[in-house]
Length: 559
Image 1 (tube, rainbow, N blue to C red):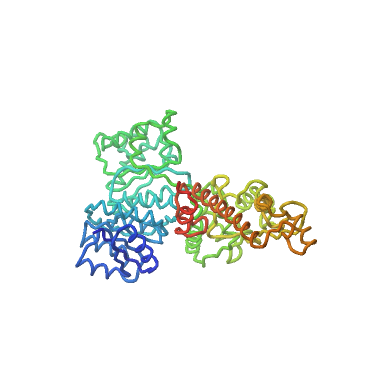
Image 2: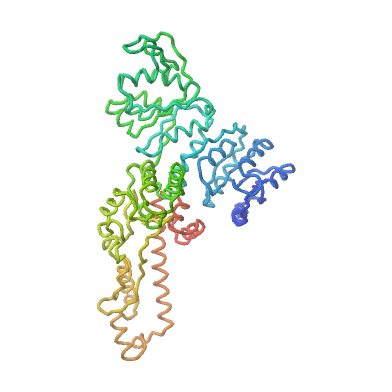
């Protein structure tokens, strides 16, 4: 029997999963606490166990370790609404089959369960690694993929190449890989290739013997020797001189090296993690980087997303950096207004997370009040805002929100950084401080569509004109005819003989037609923006994951 057990203190989660799995032919048994599962395992073993992390009593991670001892072949899927690096790493180190961040798409969860049923691999629980704090935060799908990769690499010594723009946190990734590896008790040594003079780089990496060159008055251990048994992080590897690329390639291929001026080979027991913001493939084609060294380093590649591709992580990072800066200064963390938060979300962030951290440090020191306002932002943030939208000024929003609307015919809201044109997104952590727009009633007879209130954006006016055309095409009177008809008979529609019921039916048809087109356009744009990820699309649209699934089916968007 394909029996699935669910343990979650949230009754609604259990209920939804029970219903969905039952429809798929699974027998389901659910539990509110971990201890109930452990007692039930004495009598029976399911095919798959789904467990939340944070529950009353024992956590899902603690349950995972105990289940591994009792039933090492049982696939365990860890669910959590708290998507952080340590949770992902702890889940994989405990032998979890997969890590499923909430909210998740039901079809995704069921597909994962089916895969777990078909695979019943025996795993041994890895040793638990002590946590020395973490600065890596992120709930964006791109960061979740990075966390998942770190978890899978935690028990491997394979060489890793970390790529990403400056300021995305490449050294944090390297430290996390080291901290969650079997080498965690050994040294982590970092060396920036671009910061060491060319003639000293060989000595820095491999050390030197006494008297090997002028000024070498004593023997010196190099970074490879200092990192023995641990991890050597080579930052900005793309800036390594060609002659040193050859030396590094030999160490990676042969497993030993010589100090400068030395004659005795030293065995290398070091895990190498390299990082660069440059395109090494392109530099290899240009002859600036050895192609064979590139392939030696590029065993596993982790690509870090720029901050503009993980805008939803900005509020989390801002809170973290403000709290961290406050702790360093010994003061109370400052709060941030919605307008200021919205401004940070729309910034371009060419310096990525490092730049955001610097801005938060600046705000903790320079903002005069305990609450940070938009006008407190550093000049570069305010000037970028003014350049992007001159009507916004440097501190205040326009009195008339229509001035900040897109140009006529644009058909979309102002874009987030890096967002494809024509795709609107939801800012789920800050909203504009100005008044919201709304379509006003028809108050004139100068055009087929009438006149909307000034707050309405251009696309709403276009919609009103199209609705008016559809109503006329459907046989209803236009605004001029309706006005004349009302003055003549006191009720619209008498000239055509159409009763109120007929008009209601016709209007309902137009309403349904426009509603379907509107919803389909929104969902398709959101799915294009999230590259087909339904859960993320639902979050950005501000609807539930079940709602978007139902709408996709109703609107026939699956075809």
